[in-house]
Amino acid sequence: MQRRTLLGAAFAGSALALTGRAPAYAQGLNEAALAAALEPLDPAVSGALVRVEGSAGRWRGRAGVGDVRSGSPVPWDARFRIGSMTKAFTATAMLQLVAAGLVELDAPVRRYLPERLPEGYPGTVRHLLDYTSGLQARAIPHKDRDWFLEHRFDTFEPGSQVLWNEEPPFTPGEKQVYGNVGYIVAGLVIERVTGRPYADTIRRGILRPLGLRHTYLPGTRTAIPGPHAHGYELIDGEYVDVSRANPSLQWAAAEMISTTADLDRFLTALLGGRLLPPRELQAMLTVPFETAAYGCGLSRLQLNGLEIWGKSGDRPGYNNGMGATRDLSRRLVYSVNTLRMGGDTPVIAGRLMMAALT
Image (cartoon, rainbow, N blue to C red; front, side, top):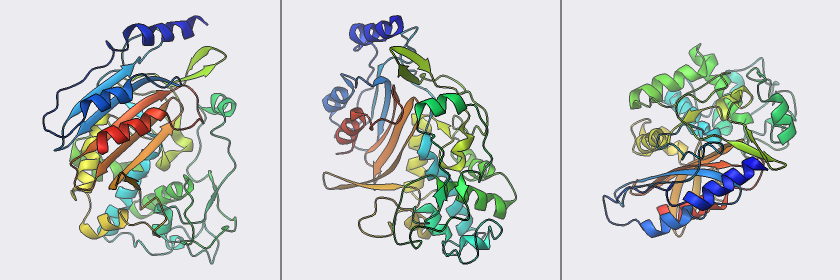
């Protein structure tokens, strides 16, 4: 109970002191709404970090604590596990290969992985990226807290997460089912056509050209390099630090670590056409049918009449998101430290989206 009291005292005694705001450099942002989105924090959140950019204005915010034991604030330059936001990088890398003529977007996946998939499977590379492949994952209870705590340092081989010979429950392209499996297979396709680890393709095509020096593909390394807010799981009143974990289970779908600054630079370059030619960027921003929520690597959200493109992601202890209007005039990147894995998206996420992007 002592640790819980310490965190409660940190929130109650220094919420304002631990919240910082940068001045707006352009008109249009509602700074009062952004500040209100952070305070008070959700009861299931220990800390939060927010970056807002664009011609509509610029704002920085943080709240809560980055370390429940010391009560220190969330670092402004904190690294964090971005979870499924990794998919936007993997999709971009794949579409760069499409633009280079090394992959055909509408070719069957079996062209690249004939020994993995059963003869007759009709799913294409596009189906992998827009979650319509019908491929299924092994039943690994990775969102179960007890399973995660027992297995968080285990190493998983790429592809071991997939039920390769299972009959798809629907014809590829007919239904969108969000998950990691398509991106695990996409990572294997990237490796097959390049002859290199998929992470190298992301580094060469995205990280190095954009100078994203604080974005990492950790592989099997368990630590978060550099300053970071700790992620916790609250168990019987005790805060268990879950910041360290082996991300190989999620691999090309959710392994990466980044910062708000790097993610804003990535999203700006991507939507601004610096990473992909027009045809491949349009593929990323095309949903397979009108009711679908996802294109190839990015999600589409209608918010107060505005079309927002971005991606969310979570790992134990971390829940994050990035989003932007299509003209990039309003951009948001946030990371919040959650205290319960497998729970609902923190209320703070919706508040920040409304305050920053509308």
